[in-house]
Image (cartoon, rainbow over all chains, first blue to last red; front, side):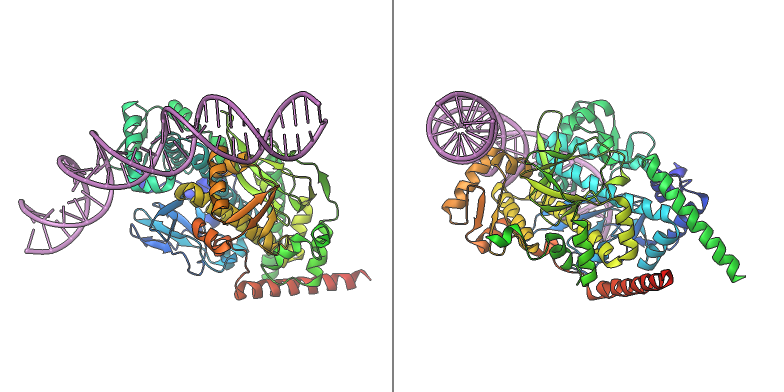
Amino acid sequence: VASASRPAVSALVAKLSHFAPLADDDARVLEGLCNQAQRLEADVDVVAEGEVPPSPFVLIDGMAYRYRLLPDGKRQILTFLLPGDVFELHAFLFTAMDYSVGTLVPTRIAPISRDIVTTLFVEHPRIGAALWWSAVQQEAIQRERIVALGRRTAAGRVAYLLSELVSRMRAVGVSHDHAIGLPLTQPELADTLGLTAVHINRVLKKFRSDGLITLERRRLVLQDVTRLHEVAGFDEGYLHLGGASAEVVLYYDRLESERAEGRAARDRGLH
Amino acid sequence: VASASRPAVSALVAKLSHFAPLADDDARVLEGLCNQAQRLEADVDVVAEGEVPPSPFVLIDGMAYRYRLLPDGKRQILTFLLPGDVFELHAFLFTAMDYSVGTLVPTRIAPISRDIVTTLFVEHPRIGAALWWSAVQQEAIQRERIVALGRRTAAGRVAYLLSELVSRMRAVGVSHDHAIGLPLTQPELADTLGLTAVHINRVLKKFRSDGLITLERRRLVLQDVTRLHEVAGFDEGYLHLGGASAEVVLYYDRLESERAEGRAARDRGLH
DNA sequence: CGAGGAATTGAGTAGGTTCAAGGCCGGTGG
DNA sequence: CCACCGGCCTTGAACCTACTCAATTCCTCG
């Protein structure tokens, strides 16, 4: 549909508003960040392991993934980056990247210079907190991956990953039903879940014949969400897609208005 | 030995100095944080899943672990917390904990109120950056766990975990040779590495007979570090135990001295 | 001294891998 | 426009790593 290519509100704003209500001003600032988007084609590296950490990025649309290549040629995919995700926010604290980031499809990303980030944190504390929160949320997603790899069966892992991706897509307004474009090959699913492509294939076959999902031509539809979540042991709460506590929201509201007054006073001073 | 119970410098200072050289003032502030330590006995929860996130803590000595209990009774251990580790630094951004933290041995932890954290970030940017870095470092450790669970054999996982723990202990001055006190049972190792206790036992047996390690009465000695690291595919660099880039250090030095001047000016004003 | 969990070992099983081969699909070049 | 090519998808069969079940011994703690 048309709305898919030009969303009413950018994924970044959609995502961060889940953390705390954003003022119009906040939204405008965030949209501004996305202006200088770079277009990347599919299957290219944004950064590679060993390189000096780049500036932070926002992923505008498309899809990317963090991965590590092992000496023996094996690959482990760490996380997927979806529209609205901010990545490498604090990579600058390290001297070298310990993983690579690659695109899966043609993707637009917007770099955010470290100076802008710093300014954002000082001048727009609520945005700063929201960015911080989104980083912590990505950590939570990593924890779920550990639980999945450590203590779930192959079917559980696959079901979990599909559920996670659909939930995250929905949270940023890219999907509204339980269907998403899923540009992942079976080898990629395998390298994410610690399995082989062959086995992924068999699990998907089972899911299809059980009426849990359909997946063809890069389009995934969850046909029976409840049952899939059961197989997955999936609980959306663990992804922390929702908001902060009232107390925290209030705290940043206060910081924000103090800052806004500060800006206003300075502006008056300039006239 | 005596130095083990009363180290020359606290683990927290030892750890954070790896990120950037700390001024005497910084070290004093950090030591001050550790004053109000709480003593916890072994096998108690510091926080439990579902609870409201607590204030951040520093682990002074002892050992703790983050874990998740699954509905079917299975357990997945996420990470281990060693002396000098700061945890739950930004948990307050979530409404509920998605995992629990428990002690493995009698442990001392010092809570740091959120106000103090905020002050620290503003007044001592270098400490703030170091804390931030230590959080990002914990994320890197999580990534390694994902790689281990996803793409390493049982022997590789065990070897990796043992290598990781020894490296981390050494980085905070708790160990100087390649031997550490390791209060982990085989069921705990199993729940960390996505294996069963029985299989852990067989792997350890092999390691012992191959002369890679000794492990008895909760004492681990790496007898052949090189060979163990080979089995593990272990590369200490991935843990980012080392420091920041010269550029970043310089950046925070500058922030720090600006802040120090500010404090001095304010102090003069009070007289 | 008794009890309960941890460590250890053996035997049988199973979930997932490996190897292999054929079909499909999308992209590329003639 | 079509033929070709490479990677993905699919399926079968044999195999292996790690699990399960179970019994014994060892430690540690009360």
